[in-house]
Length: 277
Image (cartoon, rainbow, N blue to C red; front, side, top):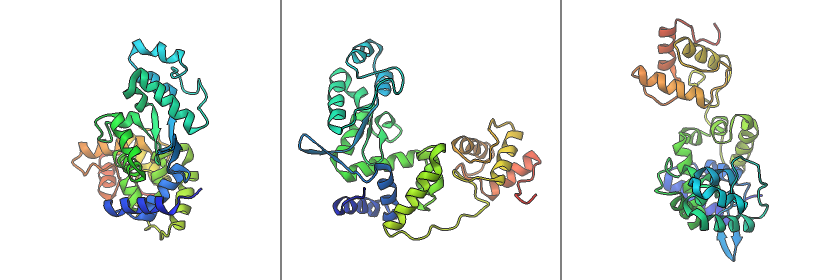
């Protein structure tokens, strides 16, 4: 599915407001939402949600968990109950869950275009999960702002701005789905009028980078005592260790291994970080 002209206009407005490439923001929003910006429930526009039984369970006070379990609104583990197929049914679940504990219920839903879990509200700068949900329910633009808050909190603005689809998908969608989502985003970007992304400098290693130089970087960090799997795949764990190394060595702590970071690791570890070595 693809967004209609009204939705595209709202997303372009948010992109202009935030100084972002509209085609890049449209691409991410379209892929993450499957081209569905809202649903109609009770005659009103609502953001698409996914109600997570296990998230409701873990955020409930212990005294309320059994009540929710008896009403088929909570389970200890993921997939112990099937997801409801319709949005009307999911909103009905949310309403019943709110009667038990409104904040935990809003924490248990993934909201809108970016399918951002309400449990993330604090990291995104919202005072409550309900406040985050209300922003998503305001408009398509509100949904996009929630998604952008999630992107910023996960330090993915650089990947968005440079159209580094692999790096973006590596964090947003997970290690097992990088190729699929990167391809979908790149195609959507071009469909919305995007141009070629700038070529990355091979000596700037970041989330999404792969290969022998990443393996060398990981080996160097491991030799210095940073606990890390040496697999040639620059993922969240590698970024955390690079950031920690940078902080401990007076470097800019951005989680990106550029020439200065690589040179410092070389000097301290005695290992040459050179793909041709």
